[in-house]
Image (cartoon, rainbow, N blue to C red; front, side, top):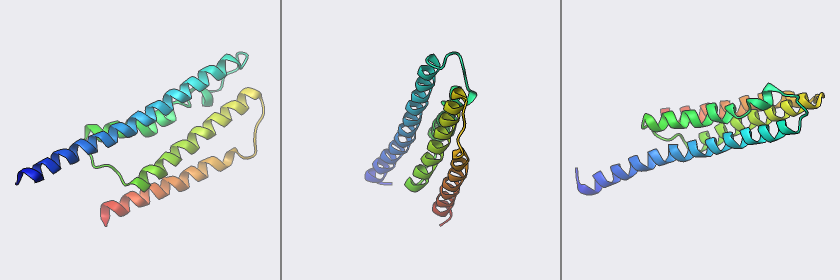
Length: 138
C-alpha cells in the first residue's frame, strides 16, 4: 500500500468517528434542551406534572445520541445523509408529540390532532429504513 492510500484510509477513519461524534453531540444538546424546557415548564405548572413532559428528553437521548455513540465505538460506517435526516424527523416528531401531550395534560385539556404525530414518525422511520437498506444492498 502506498503512503497516500494509507493517509486516505487514516483520514477516512477520522472522518467516520467525527461524524458519529458530531451527530451524538447534536442529539445530546437536543436532549439537554428538552430537559431544560421541561424543568422550566414544571416551575410554572403549579405542581402538576406529566410523564410525557418529564421524560421528553429521553427521546433524542435514546433515539439519537445512543445509536450515534454506539456507531462511534463500533467504528461503523456513517449512514447515508437521507437516512440521517429521515431519522432526525422521526426523533423530532416523537419529541414534539411528547411535549404537546405533556402541555395538554398539565393544562387539563386535549387536542384532536395529537394522533397525527406517530403515523408521521412511522412514515419517516420507513423512509429511513428503506434508504439505509438501499445503500447497504445496492
